[in-house]
Image 1 (tube, one colour):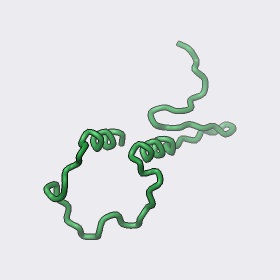
Image 2 (tube, helix red, strand yellow):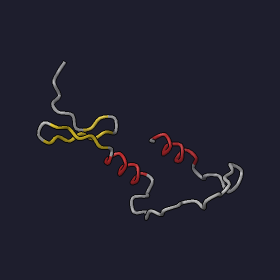
Image 3 (cartoon, helix red, strand yellow):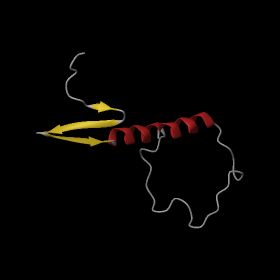
Length: 76
């Protein structure tokens, strides 16, 4: 077994060191996911869906590329 040094990135967790402390973040993971979905420049809104809206699997058009949707959900 070999010592690979300090940990920097593992399982979508970024590790930074400051003195004798270690800081764990998932900001790189979040940014990568936003870039992958082309939402990096999207503007946030307070409520994305109207309150009380009824959702149904049978209303609307199906995804044109379901494998892309599955890939994004799988990345979560």
